[in-house]
Image 1 (tube, rainbow, N blue to C red):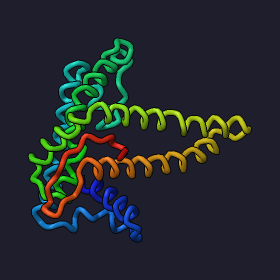
Image 2 (cartoon, rainbow, N blue to C red):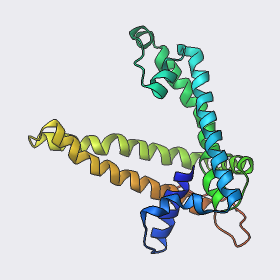
Image 3 (cartoon, rainbow, N blue to C red):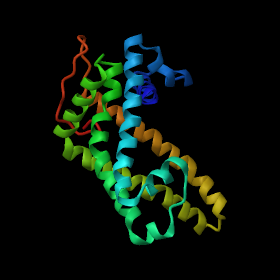
Length: 212
């Protein structure tokens, strides 16, 4: 959650024409002590939520997905062939959706608006729920971009007789640029849906997450 605040602060500096130094990524740690504690609490709550989601999924596959993601353990062929791993992944995805909604805007709500962890989680969930259609379209667009653009670059490189290593090398900067663009769009969604006020309050707005 502190890293999220750092990336969003860097995006805000870029928007305002300020110089961005690597130290800005630790901006969350330079907040007042109560806000730092709240961000740390958010991080622990997020970790607990993710473990909880994986624990629920373990009811389907006996913990194969949990062990694979947390410890890198290869799932058994029986779990894969039976479809249990796929079912666990689907259940985990469904269970993670409300977690994602609650934590989407929670870091800036804590760091920039001074909310407590639980209030920030509730407010974030409500804001995303109010703009759910726009968020679904937003995530689908980014999923398609991340799934197709690096693959397209790699395919073009290999079509020009480049080896696999060269193709992967060429696709990495493209993926990095796309990640930076995604971070900027995340800031834009927070900026449009959480307009800053002098009182530190928040006015939820029914606006597209990309700021349009």
